[in-house]
Length: 379
Image 1 (cartoon, one colour):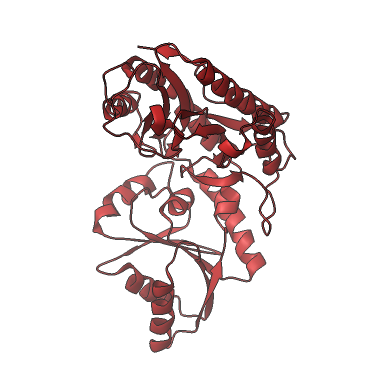
Image 2: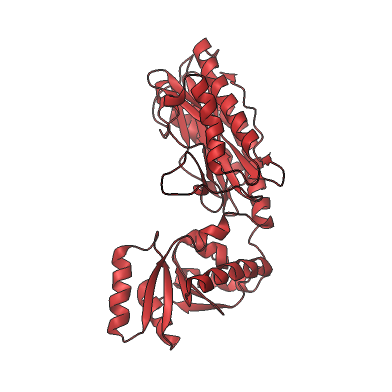
């Protein structure tokens, strides 16, 4: 799908500028790469963006000047963009750019992403240069609009999710007795490239036997053996957008205990998917999965949240987990995209996790990933 058109960026700018007005800010300094991309179509790993009520200032070094020029000559040009060279330090260039604006400003910074040391340096340097700049910490000014995906984002996410079917087929063929977890992971990562993804969305998880009881285990040198449960968790990045899928399979015929564990997690995921509707708190989706597992005596075996948002980041809002004492749950809206991935982990035996990507629709949800969920006996 590529980058969004200029009109899409304009709509995003209007939303962020309205938030600046509400906060009494003249500008927002954006240092998070995915937020910079969301607002400007600059996809580099370095850059600083300053959005004001009239312009978008992008500070870039030599590595990115040509790519930005090319984007600005296309229908994906960022409206109102002014580029600023960074000959050495990004923070020094930021001070120079703000000084050139010639008026006192109240500037927001992304408190969750800018270090204390950098903020203090900006404050000291602006004072030393006689600049009347007030540096104000902000939270979620760009992340909040990113919660609900626009049409081009949904198209990207739908495409990214659909391509995981072919990758899963390769993964299933790779699972057999005698191979190592890392060999299976290598086959998955080659398949991700073959399917057209830019890169893996995260480090591929292949967890076999007792390792399957470790939710964020990585692929190691353990050799797959008959009777193992194997958790396969992988995803790819397509046009900047992330996909994520988990399936648990058996090496050879599964044991009765493995069948019961898998059935419980599968039923928990189904309950969570059925709970997804506009207006429902995200915590209720988690409660549906958690309640089902608790009814099967597996409440203690499910120690993580039920899902996480997907987009330009592999983990973004909304959080789909239990209630937090000092944080209100997000109410689901059409256009939100997130994973649903309950699991149950029994030390010494192994574990099961089943994960799909879902899009909230006007009357429920659309499951974007399309890979069989039954416990496959492979090899």
